[in-house]
Length: 370
Image (cartoon, rainbow, N blue to C red):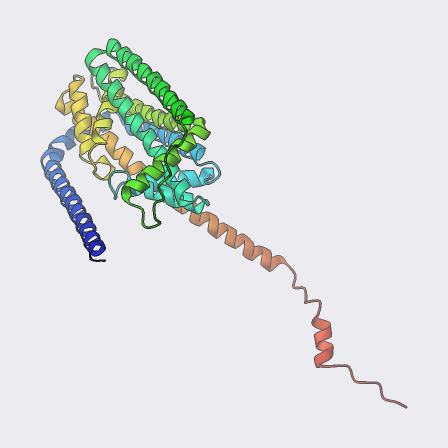
């Protein structure tokens, strides 16, 4: 009993210390961001205003490609969560998760909203965890692919890009071959040991991670199209945002090609994903500015492009969520008004038992005998 109490106390202390470290780290990052904003933004703001006045279509162009990326992501979530989410549910989960990610860092807010939407659609805890884990794994693969392709293009051009594609293809086929060989050996091997029965209790974090990984692998094996849909949606969304970023750079007069701008965005976004700040604020701007400077742009040219692009991408989900909320309230009000009008137009029909009740309460007087 004493050992269990000691273990529980140590677990609580480690959890508290871990939370404290995360909070302190987040406060340090926020302080650095405040200092950077105070130093850099005032000097960059005149260039941003003049560039926006010269090219007023650039924010609209970025917003258009953000809409395309959001549509691709919603379609991907709808595909992997078929049976649990409708199109409106998938759109609400994605937009709401994007807004929540502005507050809770490292994608935790988006994952929480996604899980809540799946639970609302009837998914169990295990099924919801599997769907969210599949989406997260697809996002990680998309970021890794973007980092490799972007860095290869910025450094070597077509030769580096083709080399990365060839190596990735070889790795995929090798992993697939090894997985099949291991599965065949496990199937041919006869169980020689008695399975160990683990007593029921509170599962540890490692056990939960293993259970979620098994669920994801089982879902992918049963329906490989789910993995293809998730990865395809993540890659399509990333390419749409990369195109918008490259066109914004070209519209502001940065002398780089569209392909180089896309490569800079993919590499910078993948690098910023490693820093757990809310919505990548600070880390994304730094990585994108560095990627544009690596591509040949100057600091004065890169800052307005990055800040305008990030402002549109950060504000657009909030505006979309507000419009969805207003539309939802409007639909509810219109439905309630229609119901009231139908009730007012329907004539009042007395209950079928009302005459009998009246006769019982106030019966007719019996006729007088002559």
